[in-house]
Every structure is written in structure tokens, then in C-alpha cells.
Length: 265
Image (cartoon, rainbow, N blue to C red; front, side, top):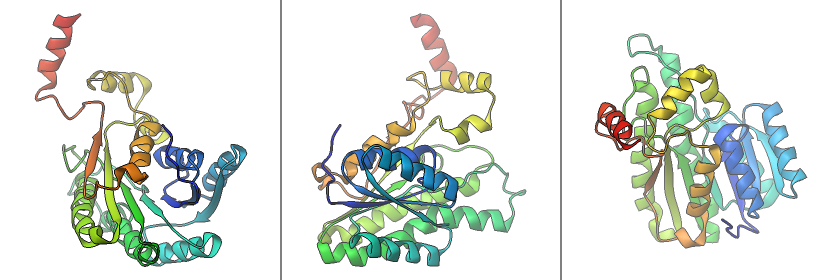
């Protein structure tokens, strides 16, 4: 898939690893100049080098998106370096499993700030520049957890992703007449280094069996739909989220699915 993003500048938060790194690299291969916004200087600089080694253009800006001031500063630096912003991708997120009664206020605040409020702050900071050029694309990484399904120990995470989906719809209406679109991707099980750390390989194999397609998704499986949302071909799409989960949210019952697969073999 190739989308012409030559001359476009894209901010990608959480671009130091996993899905964010894949987004940054694929957008760069399609011509965009990338702002790699992430907390880890080691990761951010490595992804920047990777992109430049492949002939792309990228700048690393260390940024903790859980604070509004940091996002404002990052956007101002982007304008200083490139003179414009065309695409803002909020992908940064924190994830942790704690039951509601175990979750601290600090952990709740961090999750809501990094996962959800940062999407609001990034949009607010970028819109004035989008307006000047009568063009803007905002794309966010949401999740099936919260909007579509539930998982014990993730109430705070689910809240943040559900709130993000609601934000997408309202913001899309506010800016629809200004050629600024806002869409999101809802990933299912994506095999990243963070996912690999959550379980043993044997457990991951068992989890994969519950996915209708039969395997985990890759970070690139999320990056390519985002690339489409950033394209001119998607200019008539706004306020939408796309589920990319290998069919994992489709079965009514996993037991019934297991029985079906056994009969089909």
C-alpha cells in the first residue's frame, strides 16, 4: 500500500516502540516527515535513526504526553522545525491490571491523562495550524477493550479508551466543515514487546487460539489502516473507528467456536 504523504508532517506519540514505531516508519516510507514523540530518549533516537537510514525524514522530541504543557511545547517545536503540521496521531498509552478497589488515584489519573486527555490536548494544540492550511488529520489508537469488550482489572484503561471514542465523534462534528477529520483504530491482540512481557510463550499460544484468524496481529496491521485514514482517499470519513482484531470480538461464545473448529478439522 502506498499513500503519497510527500510534503506532509506527522506527529506520532508513543512512537518509540511497538505500534507507534510501526506507524512512524510506515508513514515515513510514504513520504511524511515524522515527529517521534516519546518519553524514552533511547527508543526515540533509535527509531529516528532507523527512519533516516531508510531514507526518510524524522525528528525526535522527548515528550511525556500526560501533561498538557508538554504537548504544547512539542507542537511548537514541530512548527519551528518544519513550519507546519498535517497529521496528528495519538498512540501513546499506559496499561496496567488492577481491580477497581486496588487502583490508586495516581494510577487512574495517569491512565486517563496519557490515554485520553492527551488526545484532547493534542487536537486542541494542532487545530489552529490545521485551520491555516485548511487541512488536518487526527488519528488515535483506541482499543476494543472498553468500547467493545471488557477485561477484569482494566476498568481505568477501558474508561480511557471508551472516552476516546466518544471524543472522536464529537470532535469530528466540531471540525468537519474545516477539512479536519478525526478517526481511530481499535486494536485487538497485537503482538508487541509489551504484550510478550505480559505472558509466557505457551500462554500466548493459547490466547492466539481464541482469535478467529488464529494468530496475533502485528504493529503494522494497525499502522496501515492509519495510513489510509491519513490519505486523501479517506477524506470523506470522519468520526469513525475501525476494529482491527482478527475477529476476536465476533464470537458469541468461545466454547461454541472451539467446538466448531474441532468439527471442521
